[in-house]
Each structure stands twice: as structure tokens, then as C-alpha cells.
Image (cartoon, rainbow, N blue to C red):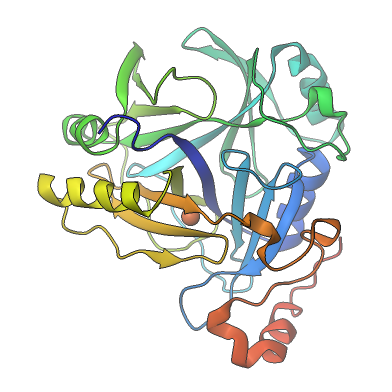
Length: 318
Ligand SMILES: [Fe+2]
């Protein structure tokens, strides 16, 4: 299983209002909106917003389903990803702390696994962290409201909340190419390769906390996607999981910009193994216009005008 799953690809959240989410990610966090589209599943359109660096490269991506129009709310709890941690230069944490306060957000300093952390929340309630790191060579968004040298580099880690440890730990080492690195109180850290930013999964053991919801519902993380190199590796990951007894791995799904398989992990958190398309987010619009106009998912192609009119029912100003 060496070098099968490499690092995070994207993390996907169910948020509340579309405008609130857009303003939070582009104006406060200074990420680029690299794609405006909709959820590829179901018959009811739900916006899908992608945020990341200039090109929306792997492990810089946070993607969001605004759920306000559907009226569906989720319950946070165990069996979910509970925290999204993003990497920033260690020297920028003071800048970010002041920026959050200036924008009316509570941000508190903490430390875990020896890393300096600024904790805050998405306006829909999902826990976020900025983690100060050095030597992160991922390129930040070059044209945001925050100077690039202080900007977010991409994901650092995710935290999975689980009631039971053993089965999840088994899955992560035997099925997901992660190795245990360290423990810190109720947290166990797992990593791919060298375990630098974008290659970390923390497990938070919370035996007494009720399970959260799995449906698309505002205020919860839906899943985390991890990058694999090609179909051959993706098939091998699926085959290995099936051989271990995880027969619920999905078929390969075309998500427009990448191909995905999904599996429900023993903790309850949903993981995805993702192969990027060579064209990435440039597959349906040129770089100069990236993220500027709504891209209708293929499943809704024959209802294009109707879908756009429906989503405009919750207008988005950008
Ligand atoms: Fe995904």
C-alpha cells in the first residue's frame, strides 16, 4: 500500500447561506473562488462552491454546499470530521488574530502536537483552525485581500471525531496508507509520508458524544477527499478495501474536475479517494475567467435555465 494515498485533495462542508460562505472564504480567509457549480447528485440543485489557490490545486481546496435554500440543517457530533485545519506561515499568526477580531470573529490561541494554532469558526458553526507552519511550498492565492506572503497555503490537517478508536485506527493503517505519528491527550495523529501540511489526519476520541448526522445538512463537514495518482491506484485502493471487508466502496464517479470513489469509515466519517483530471478547473472555463460564472453540472444540462433561475432565488453578490 506504499504511496497509494498521497495527501488531502479537498474537504467538503455543508454550510448555511451562500453569501455568508462566499464572504467568509473570499473576504476573511482570502481564498480564491475557483468554481461555482452545483452538487452532481440528486434531482434538487444545491450550489457547490470551490475555494483554493490560483488554479485550485490539490490540497488547497475547501468546497462548500450552501444548504440554506434546501432548509436542511445537520447535527454536529461523533462520526464526522469535526475540525478543518489550514496552514499559514508561522510568522503570520499575529496578523490573522488581529484580522479575525477586526472582522468580528472570536479567535483563540491554542497548541496541539507542539503546533501553534488559532481556533475560530465558520459563521455556520464548523470549527476551523489556522496552524502556523514553516517551509510550506504550496502557492497561496496571489490576488486575494491578504498579501500572498501571509496567505493560507492549503489544508494542514483534518480532525475526525469518533466514539470508538480501534476500528478506525485499523482502517487508517490497513486501508488508507496512514501511519501513527503521535498522541496528545484525546488526539491521535496519523500521517502520509513525511506528515507535513496536507498529509495529516487527527483522531479525536470522544466516547461520550452522540453521533452527528450523515446527510447533507448545514453546519457539518460532509467528507474529506484524498489524492491518488491515477485510476490504477484508485482501483487498487478500492480492491484493497474490499479485500479487508469494506464492500461499501462506491463506484468511480465523474465529478467534472476529478474522479472520485467514496467509503464510509468505521468512525462514520466519509472519505474519498480522488484522481484529478489533467485539465483540472480549466476544463470548462479559461484561467482568466476561472470561477466567475456558474457551470451547470452535466446531470442538469437539459434544465440549465431552470437551475440557474432556481439558484438565483438565493442571490449571490460577488
Ligand atoms: Fe469530494
